[in-house]
Length: 98
Image 1: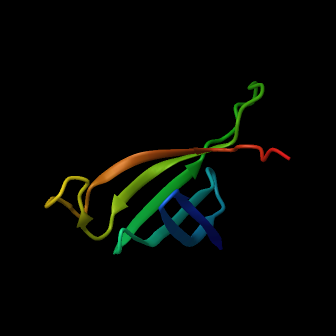
Image 2: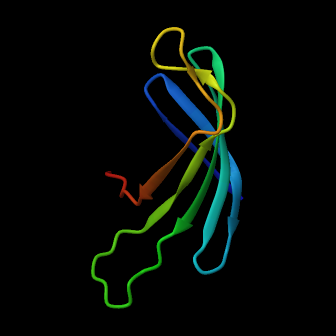
């Protein structure tokens, strides 16, 4: 099971999905949330970047693709952010500071 949250001040998506252990390991999850009073849903697919055998200080990372599952209002008044738009993403391990 894969769970988490993506967000910042004023918005957030609850993420739920699965992990497929293989080479490379993969994650597939959906992010859902209410942003500015409307529902946002995005689907994510990511792959854990394998470690280089001779690498030093490699930071664990996941790279992937995202698709907007349903449309929502665009950033400019009267515009729509349509469903089906895709993008790439990367997540890197960040140590929590005490």
